Image (spheres, rainbow, N blue to C red):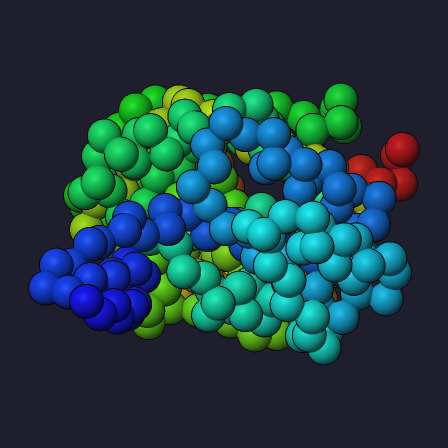
Length: 321
């Protein structure tokens, strides 16, 4: 009698004499980038530990955090075999997520930002949908947006829909307004050729369109809840002109392939904000949409004058406050 153990496609196989026993692969890799979040990190990790779904590994990516986060990460890895940690030099959010992706062994991947957390039973609910529909390449679930800031908080909800046409998902489901990396379950294979862009803010807006090119079937569900907590020190809250210019660049890469009036108006608003903050010449192409007063005005006076008018109006409004 002899034994031999091998690993194939994240499935663990043991050969005992002439028989082969195949053990189920790990289902889900949960990647959590960590940087200066010692006040919220435990809440984030504990929200996963409290889930009834347990077929997961957690990868904490300490992105050179200068506070107590590295010690917190080490504490959890000592107490829980399912939790791993990567300690690395600071490289930014994209670099941290990529490091987690490279280490992930799960059939599926999901991300949680370390100042956010999962609602009760979220993993059981969304992974049950995945089990019922193994053909899904990506599943998006609801978000409580800006949780804890009363004047901004709201729920982003979805119905139970499937999209084989990625253009329909991007435009009809308005995916361009919720390109978040979190609140989604991804088939691991989508990241074989796609990683997050290093050095870019609003990196999600660059990455989701690339993932959609790899996907054949995307779905949304009304199950589960991701709590996106308001963070005054967060990237989105503190986005400057340079950051918004990056967001504009990401959308301008998609616009030639997928566009309608609503999406074009969305990108135009980003362009107006970029001009207001930077004064840089507008770079958005002029497309033949006239469904709103702003789009009609664009064709009447041109993009440069529209940018100047928008900046002037906002300046007058601020003076009146």
